[in-house]
Length: 124
Image (cartoon, rainbow, N blue to C red; front, side):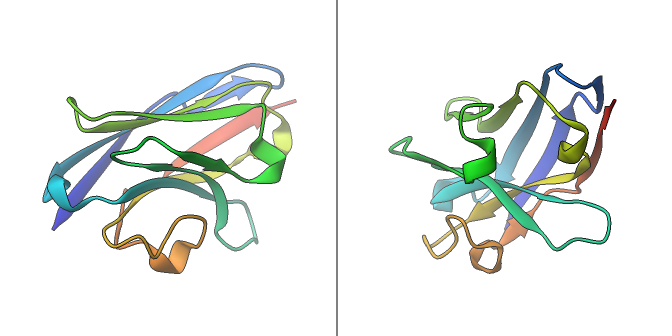
């Protein structure tokens, strides 16, 4: 199993920045991809960004490209999501997730383990 624990900023004004982090433990050698998803009020789970754990390739949802940056620190077993130019529409519960076999990437059904989720609020 893989355990994921999220941390970082939760509240910011519009136009500001936040950084979310995700610490992995357990069978971390099995991680293929780390991803970030979010779920706004009354909405389904939405893909934000993903990073290939070993190669570092990244992929972003169109609406996040240029504003969000995903990164990972393999030595510290952490993934990060830097969010800039935040908008009130970015308000959501944000989750990190681990995919062990490459079936995830931008599809939440393919991820095997999930963090606890954290409410991020962007005020206008």
